Image 1: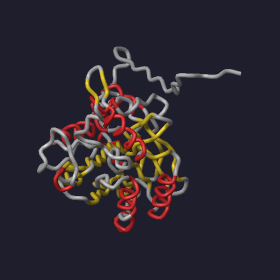
Image 2: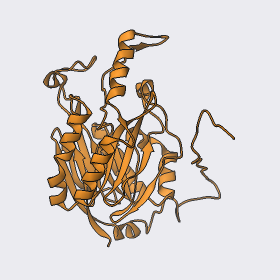
Image 3: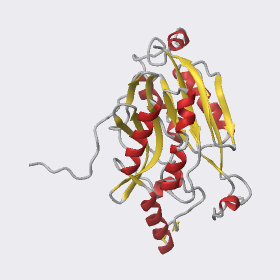
Image 4: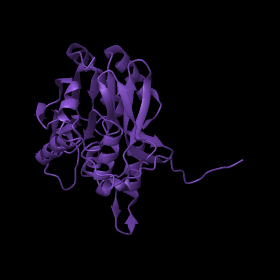
Length: 307
């Protein structure tokens, strides 16, 4: 079966925390089922939250006590993988008969990772990808992933993988994912700018793949009743802009701005062969005699015990 329905759920992390956010996500069960979606992609840092505008009390050369307290609260709102939240999401995937890709803040000891989790309707949690390079001051709060979590999975909808937010701007990571045979490129993000649409269309056109970008949507700080230093209290914290793109860069659904909602598109993976007729980025259009890429997929641990 080459035809299927895929979806992007545009939704924001609830200000009351991960339990309230999870409840909102589970509330879309009927919408996902009614759409007949075999894949639902959800935004970056949805469970655990994206603390836009926060500085965690850090300045060059010193940290303030209140920043440490802010990190403690953020750490408490992260999720364990596996854990209670992943069990609930596995149940959602099973009831919807759909694969789910969702952005979370993953807790591993005292460290946090911005991760994308993959759920199968029959096997539950099957894989994860940890963001390789947190962007800018995200490095204050998130650790770096390594090459051991770069899955591309076979699903009824197609071969899918996830690249998180500004990882999408890493040309070598894109090349690695293309070489893995990705057909449906999942891009959980909080980048709501219009230029993001250009990036998503470029990746679809470059990789000759379907792209599903799911972005958080958050109202203004004033509406949320929160403080976001340096941010206009009346402007949306994150405005959405989720989109689904075809393998020639054509927009199939969206972009959706400002509102929570489910974007849906019908796809046919047979289109990928036709799209790659004149451009197969790691195939007939590659020049391995001139360019090559080595990808280290070994897990990296700071301490290794040998018996």
